[in-house]
Length: 484
Image (cartoon, rainbow, N blue to C red; front, top):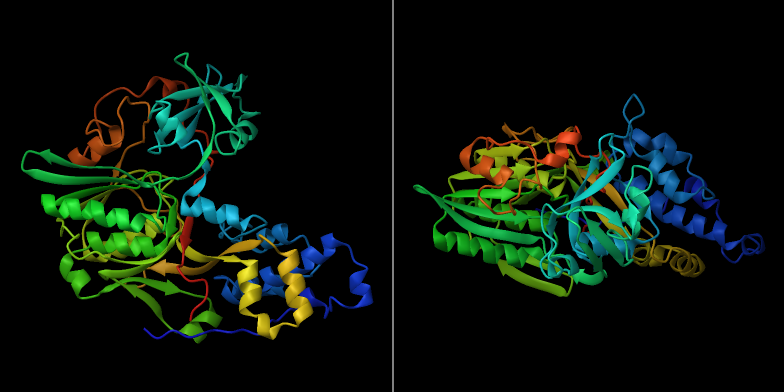
């Protein structure tokens, strides 16, 4: 598949106002304005060329001014439907692009707790943090915190609908140490540490009558997960599994290349060996005209751009050539999770167990402003380049670039996610760890029906989990920010 190096003219329109950083008038402006100008220059050019819905928002792009607050400007321009609701909920400009990248790569400061939130109390006047799982080797795991543990207070403060967001953002999701109080009377103090949150979790082989089932819990498509996935599927292949339960219930996505690696070990071997089309990309009109048709194919050899450098991996010998695929999904299953299933569906029967997935049907580029200024250094004056680097330090954008589709151009999870074939709610309070055959969703995936038992006590006092879930990043990242 031929690719082109695509250079675009830096069309600044009203963003630039033909400012020269050496002009006397320009020198009189304060740093806030200068920063806005250069961040807007970067963000405007990214949106004006790469944005999936560029044609639909062209009037807004034409009216973009260099003095506008850039974060809110990008958010206001995201494509909306006729009722004014966001169609694009994901494009975002940030002044902490390194923090975003760390989160997506799984290398971040963390206690190692993944959780959901539930209303609690007779009148739902309290909020409970229910642990979904802990990452291996994390402070939480080492402290003995497990799936189903219920946190009711943090640093002595009972969690309520009015305070829980701020408290959780500062502690469990932030970099602050905290004392966690549990509903069973335990109090545990935790200090977050910089660590890799390994998404390749529980994996095992389940033998049931004449069936041999591989089970994999996978929580994020990080770049560094690819090699671990190959090791897991090599074990599955050696054991001779004929079925796979792929648990993506908390997987908000990640790198599309890791998705390609995973899919190439799940698809029928004849499909992979024939290098059939795995996924198509649908771009805006400019990129379609410039790049032409873009697609990825099933493969066995990959170059992984890991956090510690590039390396080669092969999936040869790691495809068990399964007869049946069952996928566990919830509203937290998004983006690269959905694209993986989208690409596999034309080639094999897929049964989805759980709830509707999220419905993020597009992928994008994470681009640091410095990368953009460096790329176009020769097309900028030296003063503009130097000022751009100075005033946009650690700024970047996650911009939607393409809608992913299967080999036939279809995106079955658009717009509201995949519908489950077998509906069942996730229940971290059912008393079973992930990977236990009696755990509610895994039981359903194996047996084709939900277990017959009463719902856990906390949920009897709440109709559903709280809507505000501290969403995992719903990310589908194209491997290279620009074609070369």
